[in-house]
Length: 175
Image 1 (cartoon, rainbow, N blue to C red):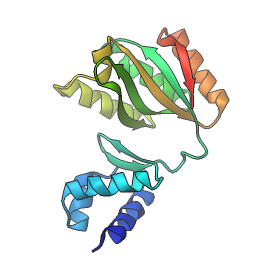
Image 2 (tube, rainbow, N blue to C red):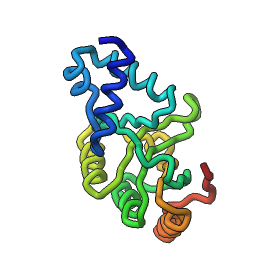
Image 3 (spheres, rainbow, N blue to C red):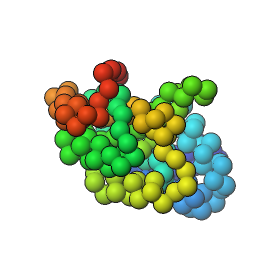
């Protein structure tokens, strides 16, 4: 199978589901290495497809063109992680990513695509069971999230609720 056909099949799989699909699953289904899948996803992204690589696999962000986005600067402790994320979700948003400004490496981004409390619970469990530190620990709790919501009003509510809980820093970035 040639690369164009394979990428078409990958897009088809991603288009048919709302849950992440692992690179391992795609590589087995398409009978290629996982590295080929990584390269194909990179080519699809370069072609303009909004494909996120989460800890659970790849997901196509189908709503990207209609969603409003805002990058929020936040700070909290490890024990407040779940509450911060739930505050965003409970007020109509979803958490696209986490971003830190690292003094050596520059901006580091981790795709999250957390849409509901189940996603958050799985993410927090993975953080707690892993030996790896969350990105926010590299910057003493200071980090950013790209938040998506259906309207500017929802983004404003999310920002207000995070501010009430003391998680907001003073700067927000519009996308």
